[in-house]
Image 1 (tube, rainbow, N blue to C red):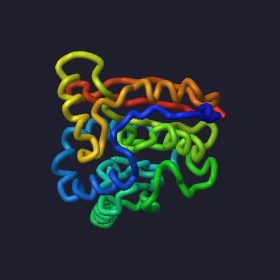
Image 2: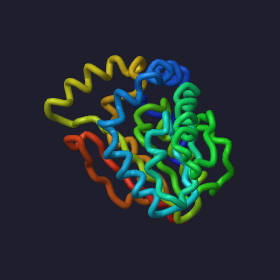
Image 3: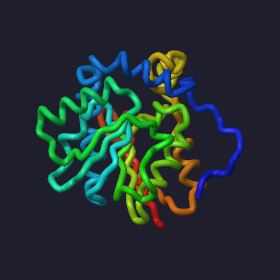
Image 4: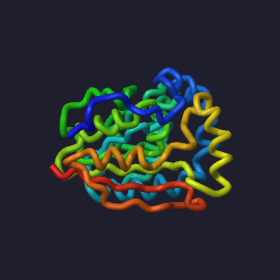
Length: 223
């Protein structure tokens, strides 16, 4: 069941998909250098969780493909991303590392996917929720393309409610359009979306390193 129609709150100063594409075209040459280490634990945890529940896996926002070598043998992965420069680097990684389990990479908007309903056993959504201009539309689409009984595993940073990180995130939030993500993104956006669905349940959420900055969330499509 989709959330009721009506005005959607603005959770981000990232206004449109073109801003995302422009930001990640700038990030593409240095993305791996900047983010491989800090996001490795979250990627490994998300891959391990999603690989337990399905063999045909959709990687939403695959970027440069940092998690692709982490999938165990037997997994078949299709990756999508809106930014072609990032996806080009993922393709280079697939060829260089001979990742036979990667069945395809495609430039695609995660809020308007070209896949049929129930096409995949599971989806992994690594560090993407705070990037897209319309996260609830993305979640609707992911739910649509996952089969009943399948899983959705997300890993992301969610905005701090208090403490030293909160003012830092507020400062970064003023620059979210150029950064390409929204540092103050509240967990309630995802929680409210789950609560509005009749066929999605949250199995668990847990913080992960470094310093508990990221959260892994496991969802299941019940029917």
